[in-house]
Amino acid sequence: MSSQIDQIDRAILDVLSVDGRISVTDLAERVGLSKTPCHLRLKRLQATGYIIGFKAVLDRKKLGLNMVAFVEVKLDDTREVALRAFNDGVRKVPEIEMCHMIAGAFDYLLKVRTRNVEDYRRVLGEQVSTLPHVSSTSTHVSIQDVQDT
Image (cartoon, rainbow, N blue to C red):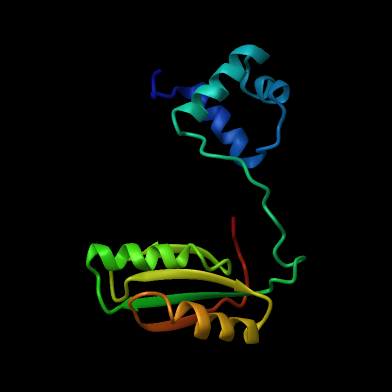
């Protein structure tokens, strides 16, 4: 099975990145294929890892999750075993939407979403600060989502 993609595959990926719920029939029409070849390409893109899943994008504000904070995290140990322990811990905190290892003045950047500042303070104190090997944190509160997808 080839892992190379062509212009039609890229067109399929472009359409799906905007509308992951589009029917195969509509997808085929949008990219200029008949249904069966489009479906086969879709399955190949999934099998070769270009498409890793589909998910619902939730309106976090309607769910009452109005506060976004970005947290710089410094670790006291950056050996591989410490990084794995931190990463495993992060995956257990549902309020952490994103976690990126960063090259620079700190080790990780977290995106944390909560209902309000009180909830954030609790998450920071009881969960983020107690993750393995955390030596310090610095919080930046978002005042407006300009683009968040």
